[in-house]
Image (cartoon, rainbow, N blue to C red; front, side):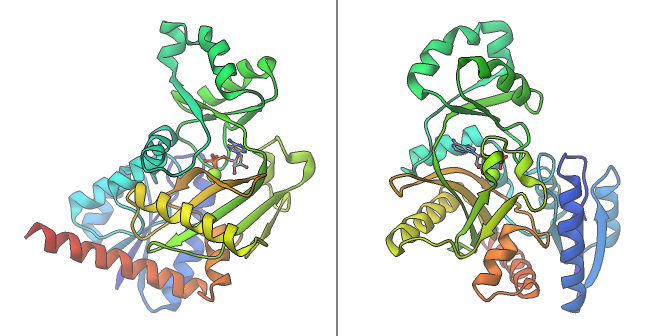
Amino acid sequence: MRVAVLKGGSSLERQVSLRSAARVEDALASLGHEVAPIDADSDLVRSLKELRPDVAFIALHGPGGEDGTPQELLEILGVPYTGPGVAACIRCMDKVLAKHLLREAGVPTPDWVAFNSTAFRELGAADALEEIEARLGYPLVVKPAAQGSSLGVRFAASRDGVPEALVSALSYDDRVLLERHVPGRELAVSVLDGDPLPIVEARPKEEDRFNYEARYEIGRTEYICPADLPDDVAADVRDAASRTYSALGCTGFARVDLMLDTDGRPDVLEANAIPGLTDTSLFPMAADAAGIGFEELVSRIIELAVERRGAAEASRT
Ligand SMILES: Nc1ncnc2c1ncn2[C@@H]1O[C@H](COP(=O)(O)OP(=O)(O)O)[C@@H](O)[C@H]1O
Ligand SMILES: [Mg+2]
């Protein structure tokens, strides 16, 4: 098959995208596919029209990559693509929308409030701080609605920390959420075609506990897969991840990030429509623990893209 690998892009996660793509390109070549790497820039549509690939492998992360933007263009061009469809990408990228959908579906997610910058600038949202404190308590976590890799995620230990955390989050996105802080263990569940893979636990260094961005530096966080959990807890965690995947309408694959609270209950933070596929990423790590090597994983992801396209065509006729 001729496979276009969409990579790069202008988001802050460009470097991760290039690393994911390099690994995917190698795997595709070993599988015997014709590989066409395409940098996602203003020539994207023209390149795709010239190339006429059988399928597009989307190795883009963050806004402009996993928010439905390239997915929409590929729909217009009729090119099958990997990962979730347009609507699911939109739902996953917007943490506020995703949390509403999770709550409606009965999937546990930490309590939160959300604002956009207009609410602050024009409607006096800052005056609601007292009510927010009463509801969420401290510490709380402030994050931009749309972003990944912990960019803009801040921890506020008390009222004094809120303004700085808000300014930081608002510098990444027009919309922010303030979320109840869940003390506990940090878990990620990769889901392949609806089936949860072995759970990964992230153990950051103690000094990074409240510095979310620092953890992404190589070696600052230890990952354990499969996570050491009692069977019933692991089953609850996998169940929360599967239900998140369905509630957000994902297809192909996605990764669900969650906290395991101190009572051993999962609380879902978010779903990533295009999880990282670099050599240190969690999705390939989880697949490996399930006995699925990287090439097999890539091959399966491609198959799912082609199958979904076939199903969509059948439902239209
Ligand atoms: N409510 C919360 N309670 C405790 N830790 C949190 C909370 N929200 C986020 N975190 C921490 O910050 C990390 C990043 O948050 P997340 O919502 O996954 O956003 P993203 O990965 O898109 O930046 C999480 O993996 C977790 O370690
Ligand atoms: Mg996350």
